[in-house]
Length: 65
Image 1 (cartoon, rainbow, N blue to C red):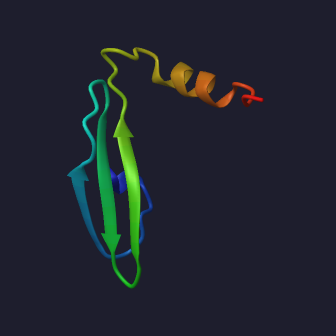
Image 2 (image 1 turned 135 degrees about the vertical axis):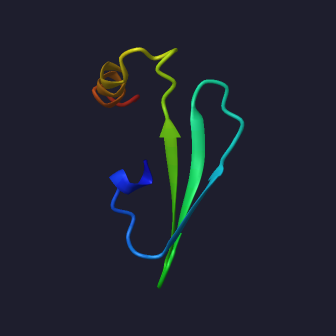
Image 3 (image 1 turned 45 degrees about the vertical axis):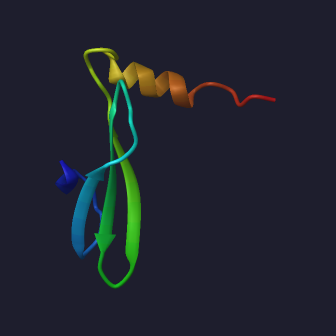
């Protein structure tokens, strides 16, 4: 799964992050010349059966005033 992302050169590690009840969340650390950390979350498709529509609704909402 991590190979789908261009995380740069270095050692890549991942560990569970947080205590999510619906999605799985991991902290991804890339250690090379610099260290970079990313949060990678897997959407539970048993709960969210249309992930594309979920992301579309999330990013198309107007900001709160």
